[in-house]
Length: 103
Image (spheres, rainbow, N blue to C red):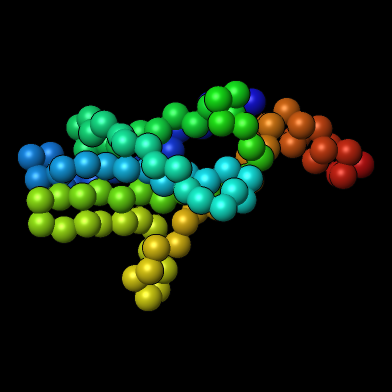
């Protein structure tokens, strides 16, 4: 599989940020794993490599901790964290399947 970049962009001042963390769960495992991320020009990036973290389904969310507060994203209409859920599909296999279905 190919590498997927999971990006979070912030306009919070870099000198206010204490940490940026990605919480990632693969294939509906029971708990999220934490990955500390480096900030580069307002961008936190995690490169998800399915050879290192095998799985077809991932869930993730980001948390930024500042000196005063903690911010998480994405959130739902109530302001509660709502992890992103993604099905990772090989693009070649996807288009082959679509071609078969459209015949």
